[in-house]
Image 1: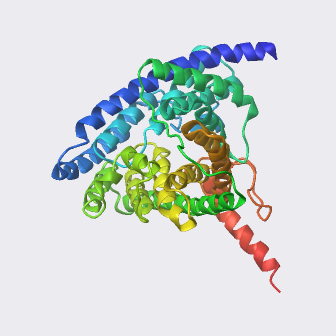
Image 2 (image 1 turned 90 degrees about the vertical axis):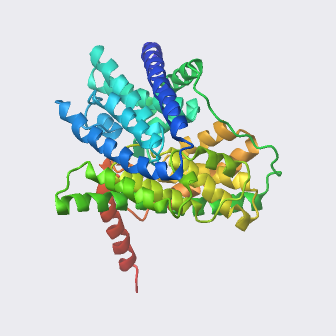
Image 3 (image 1 turned 120 degrees about the horizontal axis):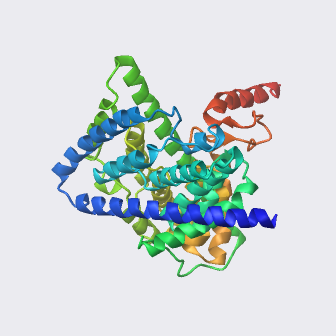
Length: 435
Protein backbone atom coordinates (compact mmCIF):
# COMPACT_ATOMS: atom_id res chain seq x y z
CA UNK A 1 0.00 0.00 0.00
CA UNK A 2 2.93 2.34 0.63
CA UNK A 3 4.07 1.59 -2.92
CA UNK A 4 0.56 2.49 -4.15
CA UNK A 5 0.68 5.79 -2.28
CA UNK A 6 4.11 6.62 -3.71
CA UNK A 7 3.05 5.57 -7.20
CA UNK A 8 0.04 7.88 -7.25
CA UNK A 9 1.87 10.66 -5.49
CA UNK A 10 4.20 10.80 -8.47
CA UNK A 11 1.65 10.12 -11.24
CA UNK A 12 -1.02 12.44 -9.83
CA UNK A 13 1.48 15.24 -9.16
CA UNK A 14 2.82 15.09 -12.71
CA UNK A 15 -0.72 15.00 -14.08
CA UNK A 16 -1.84 17.89 -11.89
CA UNK A 17 1.13 20.05 -12.91
CA UNK A 18 0.59 19.43 -16.63
CA UNK A 19 -3.18 19.89 -16.45
CA UNK A 20 -2.84 23.03 -14.30
CA UNK A 21 -0.55 24.56 -16.90
CA UNK A 22 -2.89 23.62 -19.75
CA UNK A 23 -6.01 24.97 -18.04
CA UNK A 24 -4.19 28.16 -17.01
CA UNK A 25 -3.25 28.80 -20.63
CA UNK A 26 -6.86 28.29 -21.67
CA UNK A 27 -8.27 30.51 -18.90
CA UNK A 28 -5.91 33.38 -19.70
CA UNK A 29 -6.87 33.13 -23.37
CA UNK A 30 -10.55 33.05 -22.44
CA UNK A 31 -10.29 36.08 -20.15
CA UNK A 32 -8.37 38.00 -22.81
CA UNK A 33 -11.03 37.40 -25.46
CA UNK A 34 -14.08 37.93 -23.23
CA UNK A 35 -12.62 41.20 -21.92
CA UNK A 36 -12.39 42.45 -25.52
CA UNK A 37 -16.08 41.76 -26.23
CA UNK A 38 -17.59 42.50 -22.81
CA UNK A 39 -18.63 46.10 -23.53
CA UNK A 40 -19.56 45.94 -27.21
CA UNK A 41 -22.63 47.91 -28.39
CA UNK A 42 -25.94 46.09 -28.33
CA UNK A 43 -26.23 45.92 -32.12
CA UNK A 44 -22.79 44.34 -32.36
CA UNK A 45 -23.70 41.83 -29.67
CA UNK A 46 -26.67 40.76 -31.76
CA UNK A 47 -24.32 40.13 -34.70
CA UNK A 48 -21.67 38.36 -32.62
CA UNK A 49 -24.05 35.65 -31.40
CA UNK A 50 -24.94 34.22 -34.86
CA UNK A 51 -21.31 34.61 -36.00
CA UNK A 52 -20.10 32.72 -32.94
CA UNK A 53 -22.68 30.00 -33.56
CA UNK A 54 -21.54 29.53 -37.16
CA UNK A 55 -17.87 29.41 -36.15
CA UNK A 56 -18.69 26.85 -33.47
CA UNK A 57 -20.60 24.73 -35.92
CA UNK A 58 -17.83 24.80 -38.51
CA UNK A 59 -15.13 23.99 -35.96
CA UNK A 60 -16.96 21.10 -34.32
CA UNK A 61 -18.30 19.67 -37.59
CA UNK A 62 -15.13 19.75 -39.65
CA UNK A 63 -12.50 19.60 -36.90
CA UNK A 64 -13.36 16.06 -35.86
CA UNK A 65 -13.13 14.81 -39.45
CA UNK A 66 -9.38 14.55 -38.86
CA UNK A 67 -9.98 12.13 -35.97
CA UNK A 68 -9.36 8.52 -36.94
CA UNK A 69 -9.62 6.93 -33.48
CA UNK A 70 -13.40 6.41 -33.45
CA UNK A 71 -13.46 7.41 -29.77
CA UNK A 72 -16.09 9.61 -28.17
CA UNK A 73 -14.85 12.91 -26.77
CA UNK A 74 -16.77 12.84 -23.47
CA UNK A 75 -15.23 12.36 -20.05
CA UNK A 76 -17.91 9.84 -19.07
CA UNK A 77 -17.16 7.65 -22.08
CA UNK A 78 -13.40 7.86 -21.48
CA UNK A 79 -13.75 6.45 -17.97
CA UNK A 80 -16.69 4.08 -18.38
CA UNK A 81 -16.36 2.55 -21.86
CA UNK A 82 -13.06 3.59 -23.48
CA UNK A 83 -10.55 2.29 -20.96
CA UNK A 84 -9.19 5.73 -20.19
CA UNK A 85 -8.70 6.83 -23.81
CA UNK A 86 -9.81 10.03 -25.52
CA UNK A 87 -9.26 11.48 -29.00
CA UNK A 88 -6.37 13.93 -28.77
CA UNK A 89 -8.21 16.40 -31.03
CA UNK A 90 -10.54 17.09 -28.12
CA UNK A 91 -7.82 19.13 -26.42
CA UNK A 92 -7.43 21.88 -29.06
CA UNK A 93 -10.99 21.84 -30.47
CA UNK A 94 -13.14 22.04 -27.33
CA UNK A 95 -11.25 24.91 -25.62
CA UNK A 96 -11.21 26.95 -28.84
CA UNK A 97 -14.94 26.33 -29.30
CA UNK A 98 -15.59 27.45 -25.72
CA UNK A 99 -13.63 30.68 -26.24
CA UNK A 100 -15.66 31.41 -29.38
CA UNK A 101 -18.91 30.67 -27.51
CA UNK A 102 -18.19 32.88 -24.51
CA UNK A 103 -16.48 35.70 -26.43
CA UNK A 104 -19.48 35.97 -28.75
CA UNK A 105 -21.88 36.11 -25.79
CA UNK A 106 -23.11 32.52 -25.64
CA UNK A 107 -24.43 31.63 -22.20
CA UNK A 108 -22.25 28.78 -20.90
CA UNK A 109 -19.41 27.98 -18.49
CA UNK A 110 -15.64 27.72 -18.50
CA UNK A 111 -15.16 24.42 -16.65
CA UNK A 112 -16.22 22.07 -19.47
CA UNK A 113 -13.16 22.72 -21.63
CA UNK A 114 -10.94 22.53 -18.53
CA UNK A 115 -12.25 19.05 -17.74
CA UNK A 116 -11.68 18.05 -21.38
CA UNK A 117 -8.16 19.47 -21.29
CA UNK A 118 -7.51 17.51 -18.10
CA UNK A 119 -8.93 14.27 -19.47
CA UNK A 120 -7.11 14.57 -22.82
CA UNK A 121 -3.74 15.36 -21.25
CA UNK A 122 -4.14 12.61 -18.67
CA UNK A 123 -5.10 10.11 -21.37
CA UNK A 124 -1.99 11.12 -23.33
CA UNK A 125 0.16 10.60 -20.21
CA UNK A 126 -1.35 7.15 -19.72
CA UNK A 127 -0.60 6.27 -23.33
CA UNK A 128 2.99 7.54 -23.19
CA UNK A 129 3.67 5.57 -19.99
CA UNK A 130 1.92 2.45 -21.38
CA UNK A 131 -0.33 2.15 -18.32
CA UNK A 132 -2.84 -0.68 -18.12
CA UNK A 133 -6.61 -0.14 -18.40
CA UNK A 134 -7.26 0.33 -14.67
CA UNK A 135 -4.43 2.82 -14.24
CA UNK A 136 -5.52 4.73 -17.36
CA UNK A 137 -9.05 5.07 -15.97
CA UNK A 138 -7.69 6.44 -12.72
CA UNK A 139 -5.32 8.86 -14.34
CA UNK A 140 -8.08 10.21 -16.60
CA UNK A 141 -10.21 10.74 -13.47
CA UNK A 142 -7.16 12.55 -12.04
CA UNK A 143 -7.06 14.81 -15.07
CA UNK A 144 -10.75 15.65 -14.81
CA UNK A 145 -10.40 16.46 -11.10
CA UNK A 146 -7.33 18.59 -11.79
CA UNK A 147 -9.25 20.53 -14.45
CA UNK A 148 -12.19 21.23 -12.14
CA UNK A 149 -9.90 22.19 -9.24
CA UNK A 150 -8.01 24.62 -11.47
CA UNK A 151 -11.05 26.38 -12.86
CA UNK A 152 -13.07 26.66 -9.63
CA UNK A 153 -10.21 27.56 -7.31
CA UNK A 154 -11.53 24.89 -4.93
CA UNK A 155 -8.91 22.12 -4.92
CA UNK A 156 -10.71 19.62 -2.69
CA UNK A 157 -14.25 20.20 -3.95
CA UNK A 158 -13.07 20.26 -7.57
CA UNK A 159 -11.20 17.00 -7.08
CA UNK A 160 -14.19 15.31 -5.45
CA UNK A 161 -16.51 16.67 -8.16
CA UNK A 162 -14.41 15.01 -10.85
CA UNK A 163 -14.87 11.65 -9.13
CA UNK A 164 -18.42 11.98 -7.80
CA UNK A 165 -19.89 13.13 -11.11
CA UNK A 166 -19.08 9.78 -12.74
CA UNK A 167 -22.01 7.95 -11.12
CA UNK A 168 -25.09 8.73 -9.04
CA UNK A 169 -24.91 7.18 -5.60
CA UNK A 170 -21.31 5.99 -5.72
CA UNK A 171 -17.87 7.50 -5.26
CA UNK A 172 -14.88 5.45 -6.38
CA UNK A 173 -12.72 5.52 -3.25
CA UNK A 174 -9.76 4.17 -5.20
CA UNK A 175 -9.92 7.38 -7.27
CA UNK A 176 -9.92 9.74 -4.28
CA UNK A 177 -6.23 9.92 -3.36
CA UNK A 178 -5.02 10.46 -6.95
CA UNK A 179 -7.80 12.97 -7.59
CA UNK A 180 -7.06 15.06 -4.49
CA UNK A 181 -3.31 15.10 -5.12
CA UNK A 182 -3.86 16.10 -8.75
CA UNK A 183 -6.44 18.72 -7.76
CA UNK A 184 -4.21 20.37 -5.16
CA UNK A 185 -1.18 20.40 -7.48
CA UNK A 186 -3.23 21.76 -10.38
CA UNK A 187 -4.66 24.53 -8.20
CA UNK A 188 -1.22 25.55 -6.94
CA UNK A 189 0.19 25.56 -10.47
CA UNK A 190 -2.73 27.73 -11.62
CA UNK A 191 -2.01 30.17 -8.81
CA UNK A 192 1.61 30.26 -9.95
CA UNK A 193 0.48 31.12 -13.49
CA UNK A 194 -1.65 33.97 -12.16
CA UNK A 195 -5.18 32.61 -12.58
CA UNK A 196 -7.51 34.83 -10.47
CA UNK A 197 -10.08 33.32 -8.09
CA UNK A 198 -13.00 34.86 -6.22
CA UNK A 199 -14.06 33.76 -2.72
CA UNK A 200 -16.97 34.88 -0.56
CA UNK A 201 -17.11 34.89 3.21
CA UNK A 202 -20.09 35.36 5.48
CA UNK A 203 -19.57 38.53 7.49
CA UNK A 204 -22.40 37.92 9.94
CA UNK A 205 -24.50 34.85 10.55
CA UNK A 206 -27.08 34.28 13.28
CA UNK A 207 -26.48 31.63 15.90
CA UNK A 208 -27.54 28.14 14.83
CA UNK A 209 -31.22 27.43 15.29
CA UNK A 210 -33.39 24.49 14.33
CA UNK A 211 -35.96 26.80 12.72
CA UNK A 212 -33.36 28.45 10.51
CA UNK A 213 -31.94 25.05 9.58
CA UNK A 214 -35.44 23.91 8.58
CA UNK A 215 -35.90 27.02 6.44
CA UNK A 216 -32.66 26.37 4.57
CA UNK A 217 -33.78 22.77 3.99
CA UNK A 218 -36.99 24.00 2.37
CA UNK A 219 -35.09 26.55 0.30
CA UNK A 220 -32.69 23.79 -0.76
CA UNK A 221 -35.61 21.62 -1.87
CA UNK A 222 -36.98 24.56 -3.86
CA UNK A 223 -33.57 25.00 -5.51
CA UNK A 224 -33.70 21.31 -6.43
CA UNK A 225 -36.85 22.10 -8.42
CA UNK A 226 -35.06 25.07 -10.00
CA UNK A 227 -32.29 22.67 -11.05
CA UNK A 228 -34.93 20.33 -12.48
CA UNK A 229 -36.28 23.16 -14.66
CA UNK A 230 -32.75 23.95 -15.83
CA UNK A 231 -31.95 20.31 -16.69
CA UNK A 232 -35.20 19.81 -18.57
CA UNK A 233 -34.71 23.05 -20.50
CA UNK A 234 -31.28 21.93 -21.68
CA UNK A 235 -32.28 18.40 -22.66
CA UNK A 236 -35.53 19.36 -24.36
CA UNK A 237 -33.90 22.19 -26.31
CA UNK A 238 -31.11 19.86 -27.44
CA UNK A 239 -33.73 17.33 -28.54
CA UNK A 240 -35.71 19.99 -30.40
CA UNK A 241 -32.69 21.14 -32.41
CA UNK A 242 -31.75 17.52 -33.13
CA UNK A 243 -35.25 16.79 -34.46
CA UNK A 244 -35.22 19.91 -36.63
CA UNK A 245 -31.90 18.92 -38.12
CA UNK A 246 -33.08 15.36 -38.83
CA UNK A 247 -36.48 16.42 -40.15
CA UNK A 248 -35.14 18.86 -42.72
CA UNK A 249 -31.72 17.24 -43.26
CA UNK A 250 -29.94 20.48 -42.41
CA UNK A 251 -26.22 21.18 -42.65
CA UNK A 252 -24.98 20.72 -39.03
CA UNK A 253 -23.32 24.18 -38.65
CA UNK A 254 -26.70 25.77 -39.33
CA UNK A 255 -27.95 24.58 -35.91
CA UNK A 256 -25.69 26.78 -33.74
CA UNK A 257 -26.12 29.58 -36.29
CA UNK A 258 -29.87 29.35 -35.75
CA UNK A 259 -29.26 29.20 -32.00
CA UNK A 260 -27.25 32.41 -32.25
CA UNK A 261 -30.08 34.13 -34.12
CA UNK A 262 -32.55 32.97 -31.46
CA UNK A 263 -30.27 34.27 -28.70
CA UNK A 264 -30.10 37.63 -30.47
CA UNK A 265 -33.89 37.81 -30.46
CA UNK A 266 -34.14 36.72 -26.82
CA UNK A 267 -31.88 39.50 -25.56
CA UNK A 268 -34.39 41.98 -26.90
CA UNK A 269 -36.45 41.06 -23.82
CA UNK A 270 -33.87 39.41 -21.51
CA UNK A 271 -31.08 41.57 -20.01
CA UNK A 272 -27.65 40.97 -21.51
CA UNK A 273 -26.32 40.37 -17.97
CA UNK A 274 -27.44 36.77 -18.45
CA UNK A 275 -25.18 36.23 -21.47
CA UNK A 276 -21.68 34.76 -21.22
CA UNK A 277 -20.40 33.58 -17.85
CA UNK A 278 -22.66 36.03 -15.93
CA UNK A 279 -20.16 36.11 -13.05
CA UNK A 280 -20.93 39.77 -12.16
CA UNK A 281 -24.55 38.70 -11.71
CA UNK A 282 -23.46 35.97 -9.30
CA UNK A 283 -21.29 38.46 -7.40
CA UNK A 284 -24.25 40.79 -6.96
CA UNK A 285 -26.49 37.96 -5.76
CA UNK A 286 -23.91 36.83 -3.19
CA UNK A 287 -23.41 40.45 -2.18
CA UNK A 288 -27.07 40.64 -1.13
CA UNK A 289 -28.40 42.74 -4.03
CA UNK A 290 -32.06 41.77 -4.72
CA UNK A 291 -32.51 39.43 -7.69
CA UNK A 292 -35.66 39.03 -9.84
CA UNK A 293 -37.82 35.96 -9.29
CA UNK A 294 -37.57 34.97 -12.95
CA UNK A 295 -33.81 35.51 -13.17
CA UNK A 296 -33.06 31.80 -12.90
CA UNK A 297 -35.54 31.14 -15.71
CA UNK A 298 -33.88 33.67 -18.02
CA UNK A 299 -30.44 32.21 -17.43
CA UNK A 300 -31.75 28.65 -17.87
CA UNK A 301 -33.38 29.57 -21.17
CA UNK A 302 -30.27 31.26 -22.58
CA UNK A 303 -28.03 28.35 -21.52
CA UNK A 304 -30.48 25.83 -22.99
CA UNK A 305 -30.52 27.58 -26.37
CA UNK A 306 -26.73 28.00 -26.33
CA UNK A 307 -25.86 24.40 -25.44
CA UNK A 308 -28.87 22.80 -27.10
CA UNK A 309 -28.28 24.40 -30.49
CA UNK A 310 -24.66 23.26 -30.75
CA UNK A 311 -22.49 25.93 -29.14
CA UNK A 312 -19.89 24.41 -26.85
CA UNK A 313 -19.26 25.46 -23.26
CA UNK A 314 -19.29 24.31 -19.66
CA UNK A 315 -22.46 23.51 -17.77
CA UNK A 316 -21.40 24.03 -14.13
CA UNK A 317 -20.76 27.79 -14.01
CA UNK A 318 -24.38 28.34 -15.18
CA UNK A 319 -25.44 26.23 -12.20
CA UNK A 320 -23.56 28.65 -9.94
CA UNK A 321 -25.37 31.63 -11.45
CA UNK A 322 -28.81 30.01 -11.54
CA UNK A 323 -28.44 28.82 -7.95
CA UNK A 324 -27.29 32.14 -6.52
CA UNK A 325 -29.95 34.14 -8.38
CA UNK A 326 -32.76 31.76 -7.35
CA UNK A 327 -31.56 31.43 -3.75
CA UNK A 328 -31.24 35.18 -3.38
CA UNK A 329 -34.66 35.85 -4.93
CA UNK A 330 -36.54 33.29 -2.81
CA UNK A 331 -34.64 33.87 0.46
CA UNK A 332 -36.96 36.56 1.77
CA UNK A 333 -39.95 34.21 1.43
CA UNK A 334 -38.41 32.27 4.32
CA UNK A 335 -37.05 35.24 6.22
CA UNK A 336 -33.45 34.42 5.26
CA UNK A 337 -30.57 36.76 4.56
CA UNK A 338 -30.19 37.12 0.74
CA UNK A 339 -26.48 36.27 0.90
CA UNK A 340 -27.18 33.07 2.83
CA UNK A 341 -30.00 32.28 0.39
CA UNK A 342 -27.64 32.77 -2.56
CA UNK A 343 -25.06 30.44 -0.98
CA UNK A 344 -27.74 27.82 -0.31
CA UNK A 345 -28.96 28.16 -3.90
CA UNK A 346 -25.46 27.69 -5.33
CA UNK A 347 -24.73 24.44 -3.48
CA UNK A 348 -28.30 23.21 -3.95
CA UNK A 349 -28.36 23.58 -7.74
CA UNK A 350 -24.86 22.09 -8.15
CA UNK A 351 -25.73 19.18 -5.85
CA UNK A 352 -28.92 18.40 -7.76
CA UNK A 353 -28.24 19.22 -11.42
CA UNK A 354 -24.87 17.41 -11.35
CA UNK A 355 -25.86 14.84 -8.69
CA UNK A 356 -22.76 15.71 -6.65
CA UNK A 357 -23.90 16.55 -3.09
CA UNK A 358 -20.57 15.84 -1.38
CA UNK A 359 -18.61 18.02 -3.81
CA UNK A 360 -21.26 20.77 -3.54
CA UNK A 361 -20.99 20.86 0.25
CA UNK A 362 -17.19 20.98 0.11
CA UNK A 363 -17.45 23.70 -2.53
CA UNK A 364 -19.56 25.72 -0.13
CA UNK A 365 -16.92 25.26 2.58
CA UNK A 366 -14.09 26.39 0.29
CA UNK A 367 -15.99 29.28 -1.27
CA UNK A 368 -17.76 30.62 1.81
CA UNK A 369 -16.01 29.22 4.88
CA UNK A 370 -17.56 29.30 8.34
CA UNK A 371 -18.78 26.40 10.46
CA UNK A 372 -22.33 27.65 10.97
CA UNK A 373 -22.79 28.43 7.29
CA UNK A 374 -21.65 24.91 6.44
CA UNK A 375 -24.38 23.44 8.65
CA UNK A 376 -27.03 25.31 6.72
CA UNK A 377 -25.76 24.60 3.21
CA UNK A 378 -25.11 20.90 3.90
CA UNK A 379 -28.73 20.08 4.64
CA UNK A 380 -29.92 22.21 1.73
CA UNK A 381 -27.57 20.41 -0.69
CA UNK A 382 -28.90 16.97 0.28
CA UNK A 383 -32.52 18.13 0.06
CA UNK A 384 -31.93 19.54 -3.42
CA UNK A 385 -30.10 16.38 -4.48
CA UNK A 386 -33.13 14.26 -3.56
CA UNK A 387 -35.71 16.58 -5.11
CA UNK A 388 -34.37 16.29 -8.66
CA UNK A 389 -34.74 12.51 -8.65
CA UNK A 390 -32.60 10.67 -11.20
CA UNK A 391 -32.39 13.43 -13.77
CA UNK A 392 -28.97 14.82 -14.56
CA UNK A 393 -27.41 17.54 -16.67
CA UNK A 394 -24.99 14.83 -17.87
CA UNK A 395 -26.83 12.22 -20.00
CA UNK A 396 -23.85 9.84 -19.83
CA UNK A 397 -23.70 9.86 -16.03
CA UNK A 398 -24.06 6.35 -14.62
CA UNK A 399 -26.78 5.40 -12.14
CA UNK A 400 -25.26 3.19 -9.44
CA UNK A 401 -27.99 3.27 -6.78
CA UNK A 402 -31.52 4.61 -6.72
CA UNK A 403 -32.22 7.60 -4.51
CA UNK A 404 -35.50 6.09 -3.32
CA UNK A 405 -36.43 2.62 -2.07
CA UNK A 406 -39.55 2.92 -4.23
CA UNK A 407 -37.49 2.57 -7.39
CA UNK A 408 -35.37 -0.21 -8.77
CA UNK A 409 -32.57 0.45 -11.22
CA UNK A 410 -30.14 -1.51 -13.32
CA UNK A 411 -26.71 -0.74 -11.87
CA UNK A 412 -24.18 1.12 -14.01
CA UNK A 413 -26.57 2.20 -16.75
CA UNK A 414 -26.63 5.74 -18.19
CA UNK A 415 -29.12 8.11 -16.59
CA UNK A 416 -30.92 8.85 -19.87
CA UNK A 417 -31.52 5.13 -20.46
CA UNK A 418 -33.10 4.68 -17.03
CA UNK A 419 -35.46 7.66 -16.95
CA UNK A 420 -38.44 6.03 -18.69
CA UNK A 421 -38.11 2.77 -16.76
CA UNK A 422 -37.91 4.55 -13.43
CA UNK A 423 -41.00 6.62 -14.16
CA UNK A 424 -42.94 3.50 -15.19
CA UNK A 425 -41.68 1.62 -12.14
CA UNK A 426 -42.96 4.33 -9.80
CA UNK A 427 -46.34 4.40 -11.58
CA UNK A 428 -46.64 0.60 -11.30
CA UNK A 429 -45.74 0.76 -7.59
CA UNK A 430 -48.47 3.34 -7.04
CA UNK A 431 -51.10 1.37 -8.95
CA UNK A 432 -50.37 -1.79 -6.96
CA UNK A 433 -51.20 0.09 -3.75
CA UNK A 434 -54.43 1.66 -4.92
CA UNK A 435 -57.56 0.09 -3.37
